[in-house]
Image (tube, rainbow, N blue to C red; front, side, top):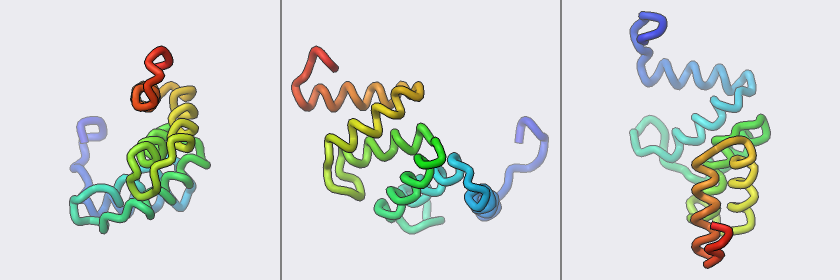
Length: 119
């Protein structure tokens, strides 16, 4: 690690550290574990429905990134049915929290709806 001058932990060690943070109800850890279930790196099975559940938990603890992930999932039907209303809800929360990614996502939703003035 460039900051603490310690060797970087292995993937298994990182998962253990994340699990400890999840047990402490850390929103970032819940979000990260949800992302683990969307990646294809082999450390977790790809399970987008499980990722959605984890992102909801992270959002309950205040994770803006979880709201972004939920918004994109609902907008694109990844692990859930396409639901523009829910997508917009989560992206608006994230945008109000300062996420540029969420603002871009909202613009894409408005573009799909042909609301070019709002986009």
